[in-house]
Image (cartoon, rainbow, N blue to C red; front, side, top):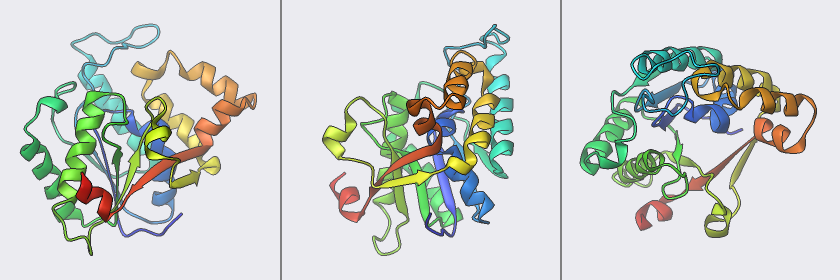
Length: 227
């Protein structure tokens, strides 16, 4: 895994980090690399309320805030930013506002690496809009000093369009911590996590792969300029 100066992670919802990047985040932190996680919303419109239900529509925002804080603690993140936007409305925010928010973070933190969603290949409108804001902001920067962008993609058949991942992190040593990060988001993941954890411990290849490999598509200068 490449040595970085500072890593900036930008996702719209609590738990967006858990499956795709929490092992990488933990490994960066253990290597002494600062990581900032900017979470745009509290995921207050999340479909699940726990299993059995322990949240209501009114209590879910605060519950998800606490779950996000616990997940950050598990990963070792000490710089968690809650950006205060509203769940399921990111796609309707003014693009200039979104771009400026990302530019402000870049100017403050001067990261060498940014991690977010690959616009157009991340299933949820909030995911895609977040990736679009990151691309727009990075495109404002001098290509010679611009941080690298690791984009997370997981839509159906996305590799047909964008090819296989450029970067695959083996996070096998962080599988247990990754499971703990997933557990922290109990309101949303209590339905699926027990079966996934069971499959992982039984060595089911798909579950092992999901918990031990994290895939990224690298945006280079030319990609940003095209977007």
